[in-house]
Length: 508
Image 1 (cartoon, rainbow, N blue to C red):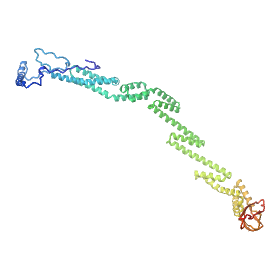
Image 2: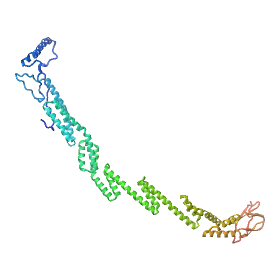
Image 3: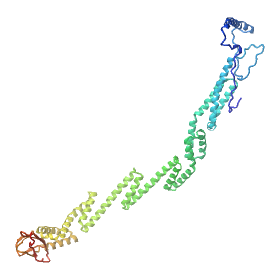
């Protein structure tokens, strides 16, 4: 009996040739047909003798069946023994031998497939990744060998088919075994398990040495040691509170093995922690700056925090507080500024400060009251400054009358303040001077008609005296056939003007 691990060698078999008496020449001529009827009669007689006479000679009942031939335990190539001279058993039938040969050939066909598949699986390392299943299949093949040697070819064929089916199941499971090996290698890489990595890679190499994923896994395996070093460094830095350094180390790890989920998860976690740390620092800086009144610095810090956590409602609350505090501080500053401006009698600027405060909050009492107080003073101050800046306008009696009313209004303001008191004194002096007339002498050629605008039409004269209020005046001379002339002169209260000559001397 062959070993279960050794392939079974089929026994050679040659189909039995028919005896010479059974070979008939299909090309016999028609001259032999005359012997056909006597031959048939002879065969009928032999058959009757076998049926009726021969059983009586052997002591058996007519029609009893012959004993079956036991051939399953004989080898196919064993030469059957010649019967004894007195034996009654018939010789082996060529038909039976042909049947056995056919069954043996069927067994050999299955065996050939089995052996070919077995060799192919062993070349792919099935004894490593499917050792138990392979041994079971070999055991079935061994049983087939035993049955084959016992010439039980049908049973042997079934045993071989059973072994072949098991081997085919092993072959069909190769994709799953390969994927499991690749998955195991990937898991080992993620765990940093070098001992678990190599067997998985070895199995995958046996199954599919050209698998693209296998090449990628080997590249990752080559980077496993430096990757682990980077991960250990990142862990140490994180434990020390240096999240920025840990993030840098993990980014290095990702560069070493971009497919490492372990490094990616660690980087995501550290980045989140680092962002949270920077967020808290930014918020703390913002509130500190807010308490110190450094509003621009507070706004910048809160903006940095919003970049890190855009949807955090805490930032909205902080910005609202910043705006409220900033607004309150601004209003306080405007109130102080407006009061200082009032004290300096800079009423126009004080009005502007109160209006700015009311633009922030229209309900502010101090701004409403201050505006009501500052606006009339600002208007009075503006009118006084305008009157003092153009004293020549006082030459107009109407202007002078209006300024007298303005002076009266200014004298009724309390408290007056140094600036207002000075303005009142200056305006009163100007009005006094404006109300004191000055004599002015005008001279002409008795041919020119003279007109002093807003005063009188003097006509032609050689000399005229006018009593005029201090101010600026214009005299116009006209004469037929000559160009008109204009003379502007100023009448000063503290100094009498020189005589003014006006005559048309330039012919047209």
